Image 1 (cartoon, one colour):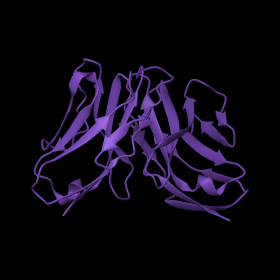
Image 2: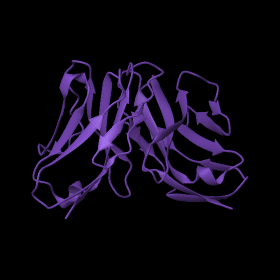
Image 3: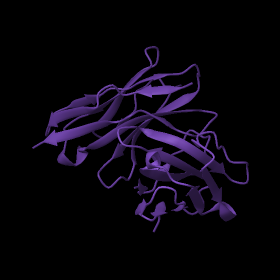
Amino acid sequence: GAGVSQSPSNKVTEKGKDVELRCDPISGHTALYWYRQSLGQGLEFLIYFQGNSAPDKSGLPSDRFSAERTGGSVSTLTIQRTQQEDSAVYLCASSLAPRTANNEQFFGPGTRLTVL
Amino acid sequence: AQTVTQSQPEMSVQEAETVTLSCTYDTSESDYYLFWYKQPPSRQMILVIRQEAYKQQNATENRFSVNFQKAAKSFSLKISDSQLGDAAMYFCAYRTGANSKLTFGKGITLSVRP
């Protein structure tokens, strides 16, 4: 497929467990973003990868959250010791040439995380 | 810090009518971009329209147009000839020219009455 894909589509976990969310960006896109969409809230920026540069982690809410991007392609967002307030939809997006006027971010369908 | 405000949580429009969704933003930057995204129940965010701050002309994309008031920091979306498929959440978003991360408003749920 040509779009951004995310897995799993839905994840239910127990409080205190670790979870990994995966994102496959569009082939050739150098920039990759993670956002979080909590109930009743807009999308909140979490982290941004651009090529081989150090990621912008300024949006990560706590040190329980981390992300990596291997080989400049697939990214994994890890949440350790999950809490109920982590329940949200986690959206991934990718783009070409991130700082140009034509920087359209293409979004995946998201992973809905539910922490019981 | 940049903020994006969508003060209306919900709106409803009759099919074939016109509806305007409001958005205001706050920034001290001069180089920035504004966006409207649509999110249907499938959760897939779709870019509806983009506006570069340096352009005075309002962007249009078929039935979608914006009213960009730079001095007032207002960026509203007008949907003409509303269709049932327009029913979705709509998010206003902002980014600076130097940074690529998007700042979103809380969104508005648009329903279309047949």
